[in-house]
Length: 71
Image (cartoon, rainbow, N blue to C red; front, side, top):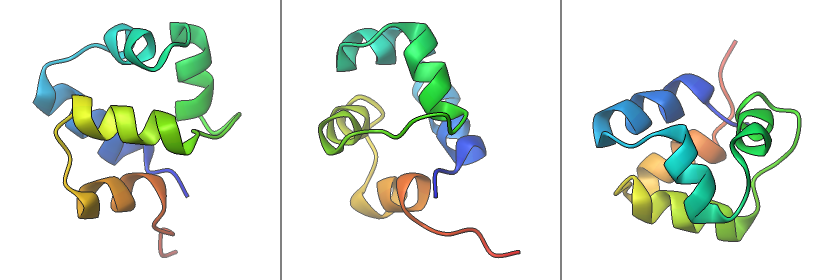
């Protein structure tokens, strides 16, 4: 499950914009916002590019993109 809040935290921490992330992964900003809001999924390639752009560790990326939230 995608952790939107943790993703936004790392975007802000890295001082990049959502638009620059969208450009880097080759989609438009609207498509990125749809992915962030859970309307569609990130591909493995997109996750890898985002990981590099935000300078995420493997654990941080796993927490953002794959870890289930506890109720």
